[in-house]
Image (cartoon, rainbow, N blue to C red):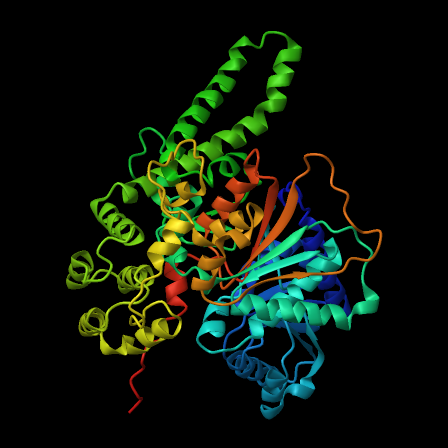
Length: 600
């Protein structure tokens, strides 16, 4: 099931197994039959760690979603609540427990906080008078979840908002804890590099935790050579741009959640001749997307314009393989063909699925509105007319296009211009509030606090200098056979990944001036390794770097780092970790607030 996690340079299955072992141990603490009541947000991440079969082995008979009112009937001895430490969830749990007590049912209640216990939550349960009903109150430390052979995520949906709006550093503490867990399993990471305020906090916490556990270090040969911590606000531009890789576009259009995507079903029906159009399915088609699927692993990181040719080549290979059956004459040949059949059929259905997805996406990328939007994005990135009101944005507001589309463009213009002139900013704000409603005034204020939409304070715009020095815009890119990371946005090289690339060669000293223009400090720390654990590198052996994005990472940035890993003379392989897998839409959404009318 999770074999693809061990294909990469670092075997991430070790991390998944450690998480499964802890889960089993907790379930065994609650002897007898069990029902789990899930905080809905946790079901996706948990699905990547343990399937229902594992829970069933440990006497889990029923599963319910946490909701107000009475619990559904279940003939079990234990009821376990799996929840995030949120106060509003405690009120629902209290309601559930009080309802059960009224029934006088002889059940044992347990609560498992993910990823940490919270005194505030326990206090709330006490105020509600139900704290004494719980036999076990425990925490399940699920910090970093393996999503793929080179990808880990904490799936903390509000990490960026907490750090940059609410000045709440809880998610940074979880990050530091997650990195300590990684070091316990994969050895101490000798070098830590970082850029940004949050990166500095995480590094400080890691070093402090290391001092506190000084005596209990595992004697493991380090798997990672270095760790690069990057704040999302060092590069606010990249997530706002439309991703142009295959996986990035699937995420932009249909949004990938915990490795799954839901697609319109009509493209995936096998029409039989003579049946006409009867009974089209209405349920969305749910597909799992990861490198366990050979074809997806091959095309996911390509620019979308290069995907069609790969799919048609694959179609020819597969139909040729099926034609082979006519040449199978002897029993041995027929037997060999039959043994290959399951693999060939899986390849054929995989090809059919991805051809359908590519058609769905092509309908969008070939539309006029997609092209117009992309043209404006690329103008902003290249510094064209970023200092005045953009007529395309005006038109979009007048046509009442989705608000998120407008906010992404306005924020992008602001970032590429180091803030907007007060007159331009006021004009946009006024237009947005008058068209979409005054309840969005809080959202605009949040975007300003986060640095995405701000008035120009200094007369100097640093973005052109940063763009030229770091070569963020490349003309004449080759989308079919790329030679630079800028192919993931058809010309724009993600600033975050450029920093990772330059760190390896020629080193950050060469870009000292530009680093000072970007927000937050940059630093380097070394962690002492116990003697005998220094890695002796073989001739030509690649270094392994863990890049941790604090505040979210996009699939296009992941594709760019994978491209660097595969470069012949790169010398470095990357494993990517993040607080959340994001795209521009869900990122802006996490910063949105609606002014609710007072309930009179």
